[in-house]
Length: 457
Ligand code: HAM
Image (cartoon, rainbow, N blue to C red):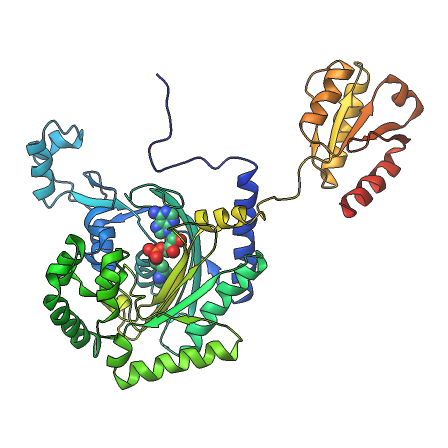
């Protein structure tokens, strides 16, 4: 039997993994300068957490989560009856039995996280972080899980780098600073051609009336819409604006726009966000159809698209979610805003633009010949590594031609040759593999030579 990674998940292999590390490292550095600190979160949570925050009717919660019933949760009562005890072995033998478990209160449904904002808010409340001074600024990175139809840039296990600001202020300057940080990160990575889209989707004062107006308008054109949009008229009319269906575009363009229906406070907030963006020299496009696929947003929403990604070109999405902390049982005064970058897409976009190569690799292939040279080679390898050079040391003696051939294939910059002659003379032979030039050097000169060669690369 041959095993393969399941559909929609993949391995990230060297040398790609070096680029991933570099991207993640850049995020740590840039976010750090804005005062963000890392939070590490569990990859599974009660299903209910996502249902409440992301929204029961969203695609993510209604059809894309990987969920399972957990009978072993430590919060479950321990006094169990014979019937449940039987289930503790967790052998579900039939559909009915599974159904019975689902109905029982004693078992908890868990889901692999489809996103991390809900977990950050859960942790914020659980650890009473509202008592911390100033805004709480957190970033995270790691895998998320959604049962989507796999295609280029869309996976079932994908990775996000995200950041959230939680605190008592909803000042528009915070929105702009979060976006500034995001763009600073893209700039650090030399990502070209990214486009920032922004919108405001109002709050609980003005959005309900707009949604009703939208629903009423959509009812009048119901027959001309596809099945998905028809369903959304009832469940979540805003999501119709997201439709990519060709024949729906002309209809959508004629629908009422939220910008014309914002309350005075939301309008002022949005205007201030734009002023703060301008203050930072940030250019953007306003996109009235940017409603996002998660229910917790209010006021500011934004998305960034990057080139080279085909239809899955959203490399980052985010927005403000002022009511979410309260919704999950935390203080009503806490506001929030954040974003998540799709790391897979970011890496892909860089690779498509030809900026995917990461310099690095092997400085020295240390070819040793003769039993007496081995201990000297082992020690030299250690000193080179202590000095920060990347060294490959053959574990067994090889024939000269084979050894140097391997150095070539490993793309080493230099072969350092240590045989009995070199040992006797207290030198090594260094061969630059790009042009074949070679010279004999003392150990001290070898270190300076390697340093210079690295600097000039
Ligand atoms: P989201 O728009 O659902 O937002 O996801 C953010 C980003 O994750 C997307 O723009 C995309 O780059 C990437 N992404 C999503 N699904 C997939 C997939 N199946 N395969 C590859 N990449 C994917 C959120 O998750 C919110 N939690 C963002 C946020 C944070 N809002 C406020 N704070």
